[in-house]
Image (cartoon, rainbow, N blue to C red; front, top):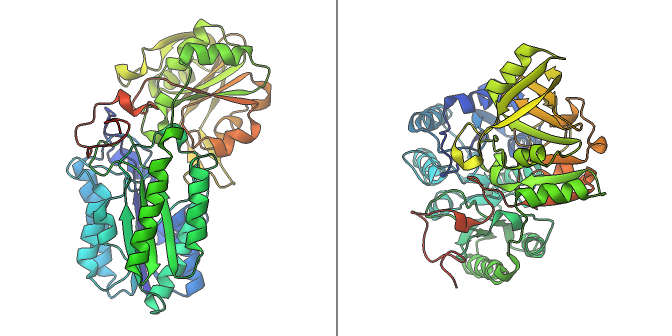
Amino acid sequence: MRVAVAGILHESNTFATFPTGRAQFEHNWTTGAEMLRRWSDTHHELTGFLQGSAEAGFDVLPLLAATATPGGVVTADVYEALLGQLLVRLELSAPLDGMLLSLHGAMVSEEFPDGDGEIVRRVRELLGPDIPLVLTLDFHTNLSQKMVDHTTATLIYRTNPHIDQRPRGLKAARLLKRIIAGEVQPVQALAKPPMVWNILHQNTSAEPLRSILADAAALEDSEGMLAVSLAAGYPYADVEEMGPAVVVVSDGDPARARKEADRLSERMWNARDQLAIHLPDSAEAVRRACASDQTPVVIVEMGDNIGGGSPGDSTAILSELVRQGAPRAVSVIYDPAAAAQVIAAGVGATVDLEVGGKTDRMHGDPVRIQGVVKSIHDGKFHEPEPRHGGQTDWDQGPTAIVEIANGTLGVLDSRRTAPMSLHQITSLGIKPEEMQILVVKAAIAYRAAYEPIAGSIIEADTPGVSAVNPARFEYRHRRRPLWPLDGE
């Protein structure tokens, strides 16, 4: 059985001022044998595809795998280069018995608001109507009818933080084997409740999602069901498809698929009174953290969630750490120029410089810090455990630590790196248990790494392109009505 495997993943924040181009993809853009080496042993769904393909005895045709850190919309030239390379390699791989495709589901290009839907449409056009195509998507997908119409079966991660990517990829490969063998006849139904599910309540280990996802998992395991998936959606892409979704794949029973998709969608709609947002601002969050004896206190800087497409250089929390003289705090700031300046000064040097706040004015002004260069690092680290995003080897670029005052550390890195792994800071010699405050530029994804060591967690309602409250944004392209933006 000849099966093609491919993946293009990007979460595109349409409010971000910086586009996503070739430079953002180039470190994770592989084809052919190189793709197999890169994804042979990670916690990503691509590894699940390969594991399941080996189990099934597939003759695997590795086409292309490309990922980039969430950011602004994907430039038209890079989008067409990625898709064009995928399609050329797909055409050269014919004849095929099936295909496994990994997409994010919230990619927006300069030309295509539904970037993933357009990929699926073109792949289907080349495959023809009869070759089975199984698709996996991120839990933050803004799932479109186009994605469902042009695939044979769709599976979405069940966890946020995303720690089940490899198992979902494995399930997709096993399902494809059954489809090719003619054992099952998948039919899909999509339902989308008319709402925005804010990022604060997208933790799948907490209510209300926990019980709804348990319902979906039980249904997926029932007779006649092949896959049942929920998505919370991605509220930072101003597109028509924005919002949560349910997709149900039954074995030859379209009426049951539709009934169950609508039922689970109704469950999501009925949970809207549990989605309130009551969070402290930056000043209050830092005051509480400084006074707490449940340490380390993790302050979550929601408005600068790197995993949600923010720049990583917000100074909302850093400015308060400096102003309030916070003791033993750690704040990672993306600032290549400042990192280079500190590295040039060298370990032990005294530095006086402005950091952060350089991407735009939505994330604060640069903050002046004075201190001693504590250490310099290459920024590479390894994460052995399943963590959000499934990645194992990371590189945050040349990184410098400045000890400011009261034992507070400003970590300046050169590549935007979401705090998915605790090794991002432990690899720098920082011991979390000795710190009063750890600042993470995140929303939910950090939890798999930081929750086990946190004494307490304070989520802060800070400004930025990933601000927690969707009412902060001016949407132009979303469908209407959507609760709570348009009332009931």
